[in-house]
Amino acid sequence: MILGSWFDGFDRVRRAPALLGGVFALTALAALPLAVVMRGAIQTHLGPSLAAGAAADGVNYDWWQEFSSQAAGLGTTFTPAILGFAATLDSLSSVFDARAPIASIAGGLAAYLLVWVFVSGGVIDRYARQRPTHAHGFFAACGVFFWRFARLGVIAGAIYWTLFAYVHRWLLDDAYEWLIVDVSAERVAFGWRALLYVVFGAALALVNVATDYAKVRLVVEDRLSAIGALSAALGFLARHPGQAFGLYALNGLCFLALIGVWAFVAPGAGSAGLSMWIGFGVTQLYLVARLALKLQFIASQTAYFQRSLAHAGYTAAPMPLWPESPAAETIVRVG
Image 1 (cartoon, rainbow, N blue to C red):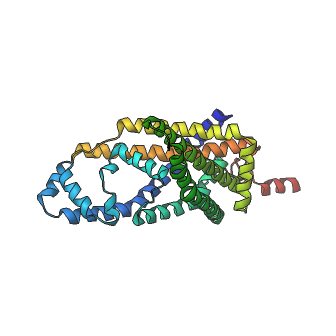
Image 2 (cartoon, one colour):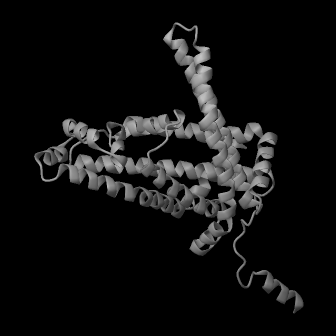
Image 3 (cartoon, rainbow, N blue to C red):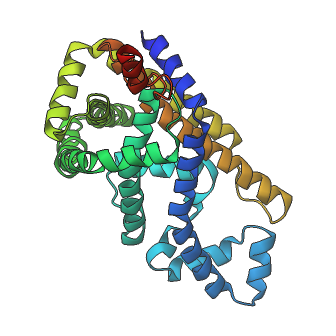
C-alpha cells in the first residue's frame, strides 16, 4: 500500500500543476521584500565605487568581509553560507542546532507560515477531491479550514517550542556531555552526537507526521476540533505504524535524493552575465522540486488515509451538474 499511495499522491500532484505554480509564486512573493531590503543595503554600501564594478564581475571577498563587519539586521545573513549547497546545509544545521533566526527573517517566516496555514486547507481539499475545484472552490476551502488549522498550528507550535527549548538542550547539551565524559576518541564523541541528532530528528518527524494526518482528518472528515483531529491522527498512526511511517520514510528518502542531486549541481560563486542567470535558473528549478516534494508529502498522505479508512470516494466524483444533479433525478422520479 505504501508504493500505491506514493504513486497515487504523485498522480494527484501531476494532475494539479496550478497548485505547484501557486505555491512557487507564494514562496517568491514571501522572499521578495527581504530581497529588496538586502539589495538596498548592498547598493548603499557599494555606491558608485570601484568595488561595485569588482563585485559585479565576480566575488570580491575583501569587500564582502568589509560589508559583513559593518552589517546589521538582515545584512548579517549575507555570508558565503548563502551560496549554492552551503545554503541548504546551513538551513538544516540551523534546525538541528536550534538556532533562532534574526528578527527580520523570523517576521518574514511567520508571515509565510500564516499564509501557508491559510492555503493548506485548499491544497488538501483539492488532492482529496481529485478533480479541479477552480479558484472559488479552492479559496472557499481555505476559508473554511483556516481557523481549524490555526488552532492546530497553535498546538503544534507549542509542542515544537517544547522540543527546541527543552528536549534539544537536554539531548545535545546535558545528555551529550554525560555520555562523552570519559570518551577519549573523537569518532566516538561524534557518533554519540550523531545518534542524539537522530533521536531529536525522530521526535520532530513524529510531531510533523502526526500534524500532517491531523490536517488530513480535519479536511477529509470535516472535523471541527483541532484537538480531536490530532488525537484521531495519533490513533491512526498507532493502528497503522508501519504503513504510515513507511510512507513518510519513502518521501524522506526522496528528499535526501533531491538534496544529493542538488549537492552536485548547485552553482557556486560566479560572475555577472550568462553564468549568473544559469545559476539562478538552476536554483529556481531546485526550489520548484522542493515545493513539488512538499506537495507530494501532502498528496500521498491524503491518498493513504483515504485508502486506509475507505474514504477513497470522498467527494471524488465530479460536481453534480444539470441534468445529472440530484434535483434533476428528483424531477424525473416525480414525473
